[in-house]
Image (tube, rainbow, N blue to C red; front, side, top):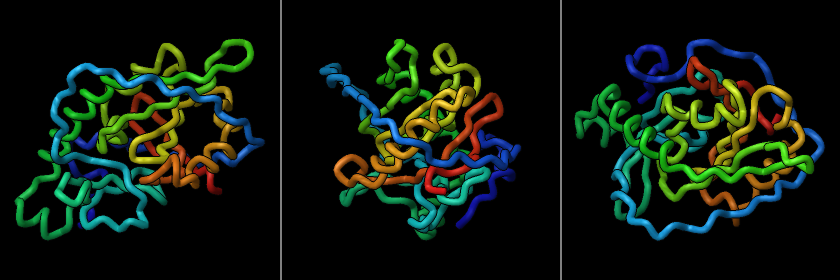
Length: 222
């Protein structure tokens, strides 16, 4: 069951396509440090939400991502067997409405944006190259739906971002201006293929996030 991107009010996906492709460049090895987990009490995990998924996963219900070839936006739910995308039967039997589900998922995306702990990687001069974002929530990738996402990074990276969602629980954020991503492309590809790091791989597509929303503009796999 496919939901067209432009026919569902409230779906914060962009309407402009950018036909640019980012190619892998000479590898730099990310020097990443993991922030220690906090012992603070956390709110209960929502039992359903939206997530970016590899299109080859063929979820029963999904919305395309503008410009995306390898990634779709799919509703999923937490079951006794783990996180599972909705089947067509699940969606129909539950009488789900895309606009309502999207609104619910976007509220969770807003909450997640506020809770993100950003791990910055700096160059030898102390200038920030990128941010690594990790979180145990299966709905982490839905933060791209939130209008709070861009402002969270604007001070460090400006009003245009490049984002690579390599895994359900892990993504990278670069400033779109300055070609910072080019120097790390090969290393990110290696991380994506490392099953010890990416247990739930999404894609190597590069998303441009700006004031209009987000859209895929190319892939590190090309």
